[in-house]
Image 1 (cartoon, rainbow, N blue to C red):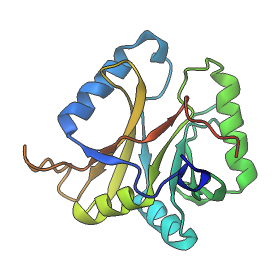
Image 2: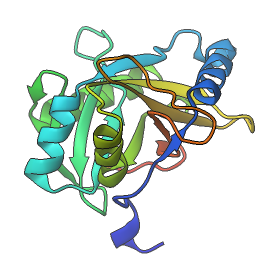
Image 3: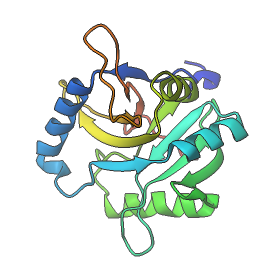
Amino acid sequence: MNAKNKFPKDKGAPIRVGKAKAEQARWKKNPKNKDLPDTFPVSVEQLQLHIEKYDCNGIEFCNGSNIEGGYSPVMAAVDGEGNLLATFDNNGPIPIDEFKSCRENWREQHPDPDTTQFFYLGEEAITTNIIDFDVVRYEAAFVEESDGSNSAVLYGYSYDGMKDPGEEEPDTALNRSYICPPLCDEN
């Protein structure tokens, strides 16, 4: 894979809600995850704003801890090489130094090399999902796939709740993201 495609715009794919919920339950049951948060809200407005303003390839969704040690997830708009273009949380833009501090605090509090640091989804997957399913709110969740590997999903909710249109169509949850570890960057 060349550097230009390290963080592609199309990374991410729909997943059935039932399958995602089963993978999330498996993640929760794993003893190594007992002290880790399993979900966090994600602002659709902030995603759209940063995707449009920075013409990014996608978004990194990062576990973070504030200076007091409280859970503080943060996000970053990144280019195709994973370089940070802008950083934000659910309330709006945050300085890059604050983003890096939250991420580093998380790593110090959770030194196990298998602990999830972040996941990435491409701009096209996020934007298409928002438009196709009238998503107004997201919830990020960590999951364990059937092979035991960690992954993550974004559950999308419309004003009518989570759409699950039937066996023939995908639903509002997005998966098949990049996850760190094993794919990590040092930006």
